[in-house]
Image 1 (cartoon, rainbow, N blue to C red):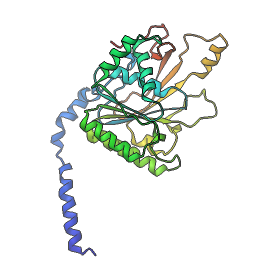
Image 2 (image 1 turned 60 degrees about the vertical axis):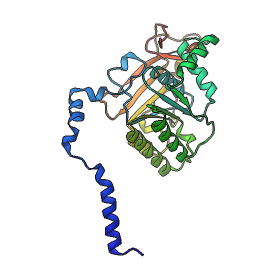
Image 3 (image 1 turned 90 degrees about the vertical axis):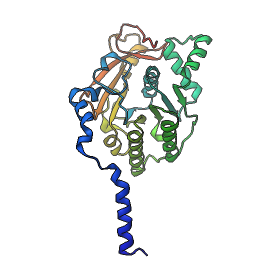
Image 4 (image 1 turned 135 degrees about the vertical axis):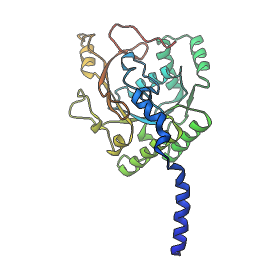
Length: 297
């Protein structure tokens, strides 16, 4: 049984431990000034599309939820973001829904710009990704604590800057366990901040009355705390109506194939949507309807 003195000693011990987190405002001068000058908001990696460069950043210490209705291409689009980012930072992909060879096959197509990629290009690209990209080779449901351990190792031992977790439903938390989902996302936010990395969490959305309607962050499936806790919410939505027209041979090429909606950006004021066009041969999403694909080199 604890006595009052025991409790006081314990509280004092905890207080000493927590004292390392108590700082003076003057210690924040550099960070506060950088925000006023705009430099603080410019930190972080950019998305592949030039029209987002001045508005959207993948900042260290943040978590982004990439949400979308099942089958709307969120993992494919995020793979292109990863391929683009490899020039400047180190990434790890934990895709429990796709075999690593399939993940890399898709990325090779996006980088090469064609489905008919040569063996020489495949070999050179895969060699080039060494020390830039790692794959978490698990294609089954993985318990949440194992995911958190993997994140810690990747950040501390491998120097990873960005980690993709695809998806929340494969992290060993029941879809009706709202408290478990909120607790796990909270720990991911802690891991991102404590390791100064960016975590990308792929998650599904509820289907609305019509699949053609672009959803909002309030349509993200599961615990409401998910979108409250994370720093950014990006929504990927395919233009299914255009696909139906294309099958009938009367699609308008100026109409976009995809909408990327910046539904939340805690440390950025810009929250709008960008329009993207999809190139089937390269699996690339591009910023206009000219037919030009993106160059990765």
